[in-house]
Amino acid sequence: MMSLALLLAACSIFDKDDGDIQGSAEKLYADAKADMASGGWQNAIKLLERVEGRAGGTLLAQQAQLDLAYANWKAGEKAAALSTLDRFIKLNPSSPGLDYALYLRGLVNFNDNIGFLAALSNQKLSERDQQAARDAYQSFKQLVEQFPESKYTPDAKLRMDYTVNALADYEVHVARYYLRRGAYIAAANRAQQAVTTYPQTPAIEEALYIMGRAYDKLGLAELRDDADRVLKGNFPNSRFLIDGNARPDDKRWWQLW
Image 1 (cartoon, rainbow, N blue to C red):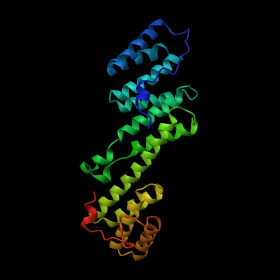
Image 2 (cartoon, rainbow, N blue to C red):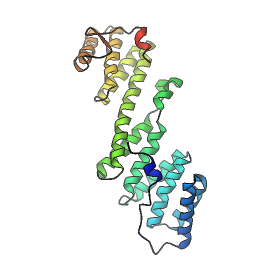
Image 3 (cartoon, one colour):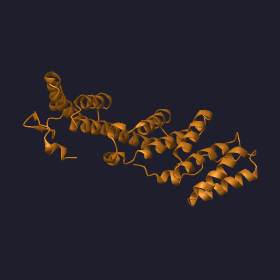
Image 4 (cartoon, rainbow, N blue to C red):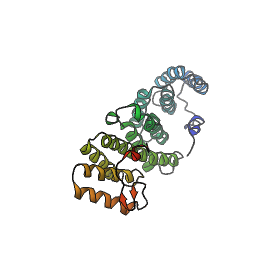
């Protein structure tokens, strides 16, 4: 996977001098970049906001806007970063920095969900919102489709795969949570949602098993047998099978997590 150092070391996307830009705006921008290089995000934000205002309508203003989004993100101001990027994307559909804007918008949302599976045990699973992960996926998807040759596209593709797998894992984690607590209808529904929405992900193996066990508890033998048949057909060596039959949902299974 391409390193995030790509962002940290990225040069300006605009190399062309613009005669309409006043020296004061250029000086402010240079100072802002120096602050960014040293981690002075808050001061850089103030300077970049001033640059954007003074250099309105120029390429420097566009570059300052992108740097402003990045600085806000690094300063922990996710909402401000996303607002700036949304504004940039809307107002500059033909900008040479549009691919970077899409990539950065994806990163802001993507990193908001890094490690979310590890944190699930400390939250009510049914209340965890994964909208940020979905938004990240959509930004990366737009980048890949609009700019297949962009230098950011290979990394975006990898992050799309990770995000889809993570979202599928989340659905299965919630389904398991419900099954353990005897909420069998909810467990079956969440497992079914994982199978339907993310059919090509590794998490589907467990989703099918959970469906079978939930339907069994509900006395829905036909649906149980359907789920078990699909599990055996697609995962003949599944850890959820014993001698070709779906294993019972005993304590040994729960101890796997």
